[in-house]
Image (tube, rainbow, N blue to C red; front, top):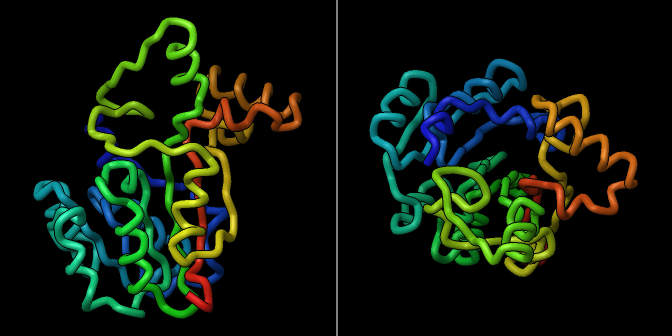
Length: 223
C-alpha cells in the first residue's frame, strides 16, 4: 500500500455528508486526519477510529476520542458495543480489502443510528486504466496502490458496488464518481482532461473514466 494513504484527508466526500454529524466512526482511519477535518469543519462531536496499523493508530489516538487497533476482517465483534450509536460510518477504500465485504456491510449496518448513514469509496475495476491494458495487451498487473492494489481481494463496477449495499439492507442515497471527474477538483493535467472529456460527452463514459465510486447509503427502514 502507498504510505501516503495514511496522510490523506478525504475531502472528496464533502457533498455526501449529512447536515449534522454527532458520532462518526471511520474504519481504516489511518492517522485520523479525516476525522479531525470533520470535527474542525463539520462540527462532528465524537470521533472513533479503527485502524490496522499500530503506528498510524497511535497518531490517530492523539486527535480522536477513541481509537481501536483491529483487523476488521476478523474482528467484526468489535462493532457490537456501538450498536445504534453511530451517525456517520466511513468505509473509505476498505471494502475491497475484505474477503467477505457483503457480510461486513450487513454487520456494520447494526452500528448505525436510525438516521445514520454510511459513506464508502470503492475502486472502479471498469476503469479504462484496467480494461484498456486487459483488452488490448492481455495485461492485469497489480501495483502498490490504485485500482489494482496488490492487497485488493474484491473488485467492483458501479452496478456491483450499488448491489453490495442494496442487497444487504441499504437504500443508496447518492453515488458519485471520484473527484477527478469534477473539473474544479481535478489536481493534475490528466485529471482536468478526463473531467473535460466527461463533461463534453455528457457523462456517457463516466463508468470508464472513474477511478472510484463514492456511495452514501442508509439502512432500509424495513431491513
